[in-house]
Length: 544
Image 1 (cartoon, rainbow, N blue to C red):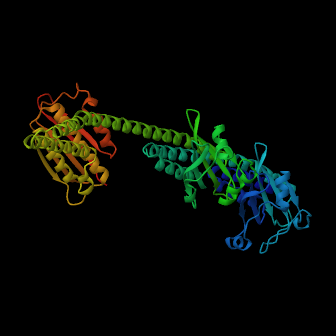
Image 2 (cartoon, rainbow, N blue to C red):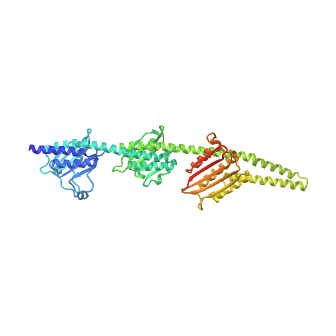
């Protein structure tokens, strides 16, 4: 008898060592179940993991049942009857015949018969993590069996905790890597619509959520869905709702994360919307920039049996949202800065046009009025003819000025015929007006460039020619356009007096604006110049 007891104790020690050697939680749970069956001689063993509500089982690991028996039984137990007794009482329970216990609720069809029963809780820091269930031992379970399984449960608790910590650390390490990768991707996207769509999709994948929506506040005290990810969420984008009476609006005002395990039970959640989209649980995280909430990310229904999000999900969502908020703020600031620069450029162009209209067209029109007075006051036919001839010349000159201004605003040839014909017209007009010889060579092929790229190249060459007139004192200018290897290169070179790039004010030559214009199409502008050696401006633009 003593030898048998010693043998069982050695088996318990070996089982404890084996359980502790596993690192993944699934392997630990399976090893515990098998060890419990071995040291007691039970035919069947199982371990049920209690869910967060402390009312049901969320996992059920078995030993002794074949795959075919599992399939015939169907859904695994959730914690009713005798299993529920251990969930609520968290105390060891030993029965000779569980079918005779009034608390038993029987077995589902195709379930093998089970009579003798031993149940022992697995306690983690004073709280039941789950329960070990053993059945069908010849002669029933003894007090010694109960003691041995209780000791195994204590060892199992340590192994479970270690496995959970290991998996948590490993999972968090992987998530941090994903966060960093996503963070770099977010910073690289500056268009707000595309950025928000990327944020929604990335958070959905990180949390394994059914759907994620991003809502931003509007000026009329409403919230508007700007991006959504998940099946059937296309119709959500653009949808707006009152800010004061919504969960997203309340989270925006409070500026803190809120987890809702049951949206139906939350009075701040609109029940009509929840039913419409089949939402069960939610995680609401504000986008915070310098402690100011600029929007809300809402994730719904984790891919699990109850759809609820855990503490790890909250931590992950907050870390991700902190990075996303920086990217969104950067995108909005870049958009505002770009708009400011566009407006500044428009105002500068308006001032130039106003000056030319006043100095040239306005003076010409005044001269026409004076010429009309001469026509009115002509005393004879010869005087009248001379006045009419002068007046006609003034009208023709004024018409040419107006056409020139129209071409500078937006050349019709650029829209109708493309970049090369528009540049040919520009070069012709430039040479006639300045007396500077211009050579244009274009090797762009038969296919037209995208409209945005054509406009950019035209404006850059136009600005380069303007600089030649204002600053270069050149006699010849050459323009070369070449398309190859997925990009277009444009070169404008003059034989003027040049300048020292280190000493010149770039904004005085319009170079800052030229570089920014090239950057809008992912292009790059370079300048080579030296005093007395002319200037070369080169732009390279990728062609999709």
